[in-house]
Image 1: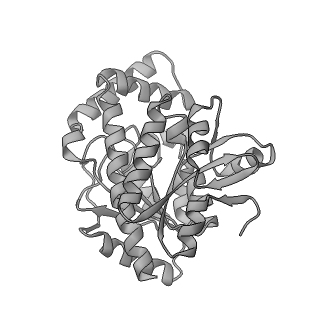
Image 2: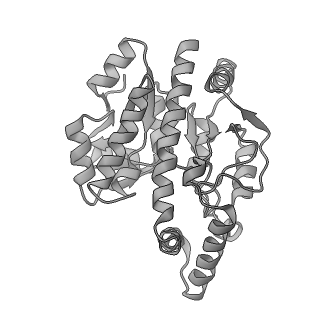
Length: 304
């Protein structure tokens, strides 16, 4: 075991007893919503995973260590902390070496999960190719991580503010399979659908686990995207969310907002223009991903 890794007692016991483990990111806790809502959300996600026969491993950087699983006390301290660094792959060594507190993104959670031997990771949505990336080169590190790290990501597709077509093209180029869970089209985070048809759709967690096992048994490096649509009762319409994003992009351009400032501006405008519905949808899709992720992890563990 890498000396910079520190597994919680619960995760250690799960490994010793051959139980399924599901990795969870921590950026959604530190940067996604305020305390105490963030703690309530994190606790509920972990509870859903436990109720479905798997063990949650929330990953965060604390005290010069990569924590794989947080105790209730650590989770609360993390949720209350301010000025937590947002950590992608490039930032891990700096934050660990300087003993700073860091929240893992999709890319860094995947990397840390692989270090700990965890193959299933649950999040909200992956990053991807941003709109206008042909001139800005703004492409999420999540896509490169998926190309090289053997962890499957259960998510509600890529975030709606991205260029979904270019994101799918990038994943195809990198050899990353995108498998729809009970859907033939790519979900677009807040919405259940998009115009993009998927090559593969499977209806049972066991089927997905079997595909992942064959992939890695064959030595095909890299992860997989398991695209799990937001529950229907919590979803926004594709037309509604696209209208909001297009309107926000036009306004951002009018105000001269560019580069890395565009994404936080868009996310804020989506919340405002949806009257908070997007926040409720975000939480609902994370809970649903936790449910499906736990079932896939359990099925994969049974195959090992």
